Image 1 (cartoon, rainbow, N blue to C red):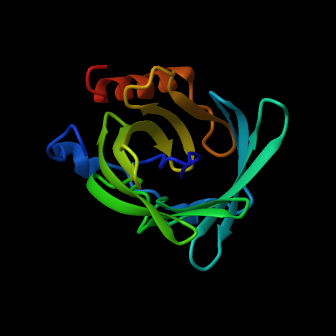
Image 2 (image 1 turned 60 degrees about the vertical axis):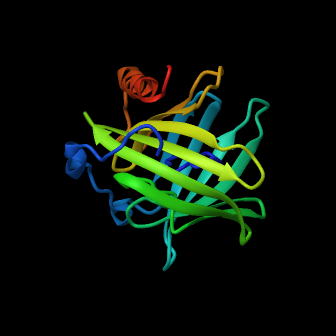
Image 3 (image 1 turned 90 degrees about the horizontal axis):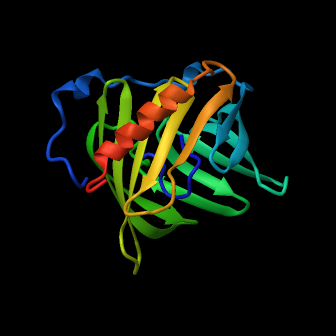
Length: 206
């Protein structure tokens, strides 16, 4: 489900999937109410999303982000039934993830990233589920650029989110978000602290 142009849920520092991997929950986007609206607070402002339903191929969602000057930026994205991101579109710019962005895949996962049909990056992901928290460690290698490593940690209750995003070696504070209204809303700041701590522990030399 992702809000970032860098793959939000995308292996570098772990060697094997832990024994608890089989306990990772499964998600079913077909169970979400069509037209349901959600809002959340994030480190860069307020946003809202609407479930647009299944279009025969993907489960589609609309995301509207409110900028600091009050403007609204809308994007549309599509996922598999399991909640794995397949594409997101902002204006006429469409980013595709083939076969998907590796969300909710335990262990190693690989994908390619395309911009309007042209490959722009390779994704290498390792994920595990522990103590109710997903941890995704992703390396995104863009053409002719140094790889970018991100750490995405989150608690996901079917369609609600408490999540933090770190970028390796970044001195900036992590990006974070949590659902504040809509089905299954109500995650506390204590939950946000838990996922932030999980990402801090996953990062080397943190």
